[in-house]
Length: 140
Length: 217
Image (cartoon, rainbow over the protein chains, first blue to last red):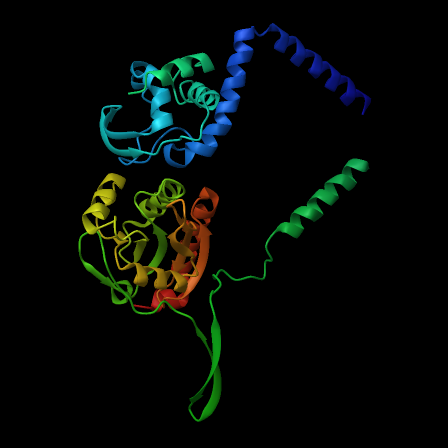
């Protein structure tokens, strides 16, 4: 019992030590990322899947890092307004419609984008609120 | 000593959770049932009549007419969906794809998916959906019929489907219904839950070995 207590304190100490070592940016990123994972589950996962794998030729996967990079300024608009028409993702053609998630706020879009663009093999770093607000102004 | 007691308690709990060893390997028969008294060889015998799926007629994605007779001698799984469904259908059919892959070589097995939006989901739309899902052959039929017929047959599968709600969404539950060769309901599974769909696959294998399934043609 006593041993467990001491081990517990020790672990807490180590966690605190590690946490204090993280830069502010890392803390910010983690906050967006973990918030985004919850939003992904609620708004995206039904169609795009737990691992961003999509569904056959019906729903595109979220694993195309090149697409994510090239379309980075448009991603917020895709979520806010939906997406319709033809897409080429990982070399495959998709045609259909993604419903708009009009009920998501800019901060929620930033969180879910940070999650998606840093999961499933993507690694783009933080997409923050300011970025999303700027991108949303340029939606076509 | 304390450890041993703990271990014993854990074992006791564990064994209490295990299904009874007395149960045989058959699935329950669901739905309403009625006793009927028949006369066999001059003696009165009480038999049980189980509710079964009534006759029906729909059209599949190849524009072929599919009736209850098309499913004679086949174990099948039924569900209800529509192609533009943004919520639970992609999950359901991602899971159903596992059932399809497992049994597509078995000609005595079918999957039928009724569209509850026949106005939009015409036969060509269903065919396109099937192509995009990567399903071919006759294992998995996507069925089109009138709204009335579809909603009526849903009741026989104990599935609830309703008209569009004020938000323009269809309300339906994501159940997969297992039906045996006598067209009796043998199980319902939440099609949005991968664990339940794994159980469905196991139950189909169990059902296939039941004597009256093996005998039925």
